[in-house]
Length: 77
Image (cartoon, rainbow, N blue to C red; front, side):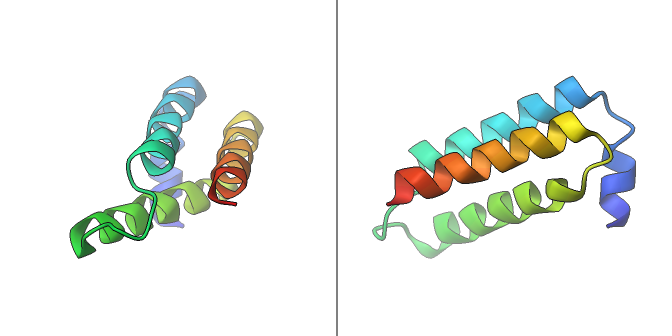
């Protein structure tokens, strides 16, 4: 939780942009069962980062993360 406090010092628009990039990477490049272990670990780190931002200090960032997670789940099934 302490990293969220530091991250909250950045503008919400910057956080939204970076989280969108992480979400798009997960959706477009890091999906599927044929990934090597390094890519699977990277995907887990990106998803962990997204989940951490569900507790962001800004409501717009929390909403963006919720939308990204929803989109990732919809695309997975």
